[in-house]
Every structure is written in structure tokens, then in C-alpha cells.
Length: 514
Image (cartoon, rainbow, N blue to C red; front, side, top):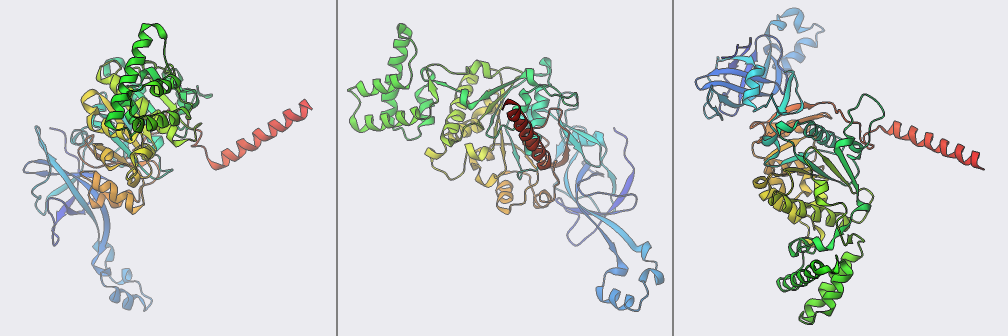
């Protein structure tokens, strides 16, 4: 049995507590902080409780009218009464559960008033919160305990992860920390392939060797793909993939398209070579067995895809090159304005990679959707949310095949409820919008009102984990990044200085040339 820490307080009796979901204790020694963990003995083993709030009380200052009346004479109450001896610090806690040497259970029965309270030991917290000290992903540290938060990779990612926060609260920073941890895993510990769909170029810095020695170089493990260089090979398209890109296809249209694609692929194998959208469009136009009321819309859809300038005769890059163990692939979509083109890229690559993983042709992977509400929006038509269908499929079925997703969003209320509800672990940074908080609380099992209230007061870089990874809510401080900062993370002052320095240099070069 681990050595018990020093006793600091005693459980007190209030009108409704202690009960299985709340208990208060008076602090007899030292200090207790909001967000700290405490423990106490229990018939079923040891209780772990989270401190939700702390307050001070003093019987001499309970009645405002008495304090006002007495101190209006100019004499402080502390000069006449032993007020300091009657000041108490009281902690309000949420019992999370209790554990013994063999089991961990939720609370169904309260401890008795008078139970002695201790600061939770690190050894007990590690076990209770399911930490993996040997091979876990190091995300940060529990404040006031100096305990590293090392989470088992399967527990965190296998059943999917959501990272939710206001813009500027550190969600992309935390995502980068998770990427670093995955990139640093050794082969014998199990390495994932990681692919991120990045609408703003947040993670492109991973592919650039740092100019200083302060930051770690991940460029040799990173593949950067710019949207403008992507081509989707038409011969690689299946009816299922096309249906994901063109949500309005009817059953007969799918059958007609499938037949024509099969014919073109057969001709390709017979020596005619790969085909593109022009060839597909011509084949549809020539086919006399397609009814006119079906052929017209098909040709219209193929024409709309042609206008995206995204399709060719082969995939560039190939799927196999994108997904490799221990490699991070960043699909940088920042150079493309057309939202439909972005969604087609996300939909196609997500479908192809998942299909390849089902066949075990590519390694297990983590697929990160930055600004996920763009790719899987809530309450939007299928035509305006081309990539939502495959994200839902990954969320529902991915864990069976070693295909994990991470949804990163600053607007949870705009994120598809179906996909979000399948994320068994949520990491929540600061959020203040009441609609977003309500949406999160409805989709996150184990998130109570007290924890929800604490989310609004989180500082930048502080986060709450809820769900499968830790079993119980956990507040922690995100560790520092090892990789260099994103171009979007520099201060406004630094950006302004760099711009003027660049302008001055360009002016000087122009003057020299003239």
C-alpha cells in the first residue's frame, strides 16, 4: 500500500452533504486550491475528490448589519474580538469515485462527517486517472500536484478525440503537442501515421527546419502537401467515393456511373492508359442506355467537378506516400479559397485512406480535422457539407479498424452532433459562449455543472479532459511545445516589426536595382 499523505482537513456536515456527488471539508492545516485533488479513507477503499471551490467563513462577520453597526464607530472588530481564531477555510468538492487494490468505482454512498481528508498522493492519482507512466503521451502537468499527465495512446485516441476551445485559447498549441508525442514514439511502442487537414497552415512549421537550437526539428518526419499541388486521379474514383463528393446522386445514376467507370478502367487495363474527367464526360455523353433525365444532371455534376481544376489521370500525391508509420502529413489548404474544393479534398482523401486502412494496406492512423465545423457542419444540407458523411463514418466505424479522428473546433455548436458524440474523450480549453457550453455538456458524458462553470475561467493553456482517457474530469496545464511556433502564433507586435523590416529590405533592394 502507498504511504498516506498528511491530513489537512475534516469532512463537515451541511444541510444536504456529504452525499455521493458533493461533500465539504474544513481545512485544518495548510492550503487547498480550486482544481486540486484530495483523498480520504472509505469502506470501499480510498475516495478521490476534486475541489470545485474554496471559501472562507468567520462567525463574527456573518451578519452584515452587525459588522456595519460595530465598525461604523471607528473601531475594528478584530481589536475587540478574537476574529482571527474563528476564520475557517472550507473546500467544496465533487467525489469522483473510490478504488481498492482491485477495482475503481463511481460513488454511490457518501463518507461520514468527521472523515479525515488528505491531499491526494501522486501514486493514487496515477492509478485512479488511468495514467500510463511508461509509454503514455505527455500532454502537461496537474497544477498543484506537479504530476505529469501521461495518457495511454489507445485510451486517448482509439475511440476518437475532440479538442474544443475559443480562438486563441491554445487548441492548436495542444494539437501540436499531441503530434509531437506521436512523432517521438519508438517503433517498439507502436507508431501511428498522422494526417492533418489544415485550413490555415497552422502546422506547416513542422515541415520547416528550425533556425535555432531551442526547438526540435521534426521536418524529416513531416510531409507538407499544398492544396494547389493536389490532383485526384479519376481512375481511382469509385461510385462510393463519387457519391461522397456528389451527395445528390440517385440510385440509377450511381448504377450508370459505376458501369461507365468499370468500362473505362477495363479499357485502361487493356492498354488505353489512364483517363480523366474529359474522358468520363465523353463516355457518359456517348452512352445511349442512360436516360436523358439522368444523363443531363450527371454531365452537369461532372462539369462542376471539372471547374475545380482538381482532377487528373493519377493521384498527386499517392495515398501510400501520405500514410506512413511515424510520419506527419500536413494537407495545407490555406492557398485555396473555394470551400467546395477544400471539402472535396478532405472527403476524397479521408475516404481513400479509410478504405485502404480497412484492407490493412496502410498503417493505423490519426486523422486530425482542424476547424472541424468547416468539414462536418451541423444543420447544413449534404450539398454544402460534402465531407461530413465520411467524418461521420470514421467517427462511427473507425475504431474497429485502427482509424482514429481528432476534431478540433472553436465553434462546437456548429459542429455535427453525430460526429462529436462519437468522440469518447474531449479536451476542452476556455469557452465562454453559453450555446457552445450547452452543446458540449449534452454530448460529453461525465461533464457536470461545476466542471462546466470552471471552463469559463480557464486561462490560456489550461484544459479539462473528460471521457475515456482518464475516466474522470481532469484539469491540467498543457506543456510547452518542442516544435517551433506556427506563423499564426507570433505576437501582433512581432508581426508588425517583421512586416516593416521586410518592406524596408524590399525598398532597399529596389533602390539598388534602379
